[in-house]
Length: 229
Image (cartoon, rainbow, N blue to C red; front, side):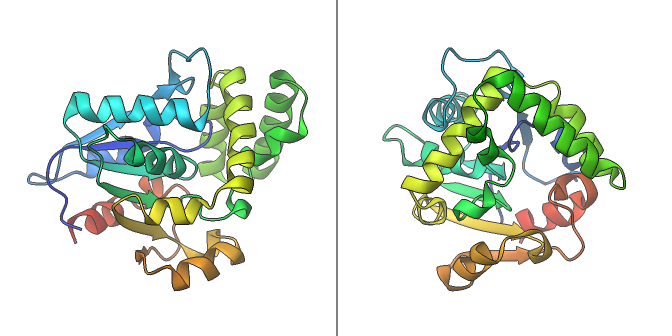
């Protein structure tokens, strides 16, 4: 992709910018500047209203502030980045989507928020689910710890909005029309419907064999290689 200029990096559902620390550490001289960004409610002060639209507006404003035309977006942040790129005053024209949401099936964590009547009960249930999954998996254990630091209201609101968005819009189509897009994935991590859509989408993709859903943590050098290609 050979990106020029600074790259904003935005974490997925409930996560924060620390997931990009290995990417910063692996950066070599000559690589673009890597700028991990905490979203409001997820490492930064929450907004009065948390939704894909409000977070997209925030991301677009931060891109203008840093002069960053490129965004590395993980998971549900791919939706946020795509919507930010579509704003009339946005300078974002390049998105590197790290297993970003393509179909409704990709909202396997965030979408469950709609099954709960309040933020506290959702947070408790999500963390219990993650901690059970984490018993044999240190990467998910780290993710659960980061989710535990997210604002409960922002977590619940974004999750509910992600499900509604996926039912009324097509995340993959919005991403594809957002500009220059590179999709980075390990197919073993992705739902079948999303893989089928991706196969015929025409999006440029890079496959990272054996990577977790958080490739910046376990395969940062390969993610950087994809950014240089």
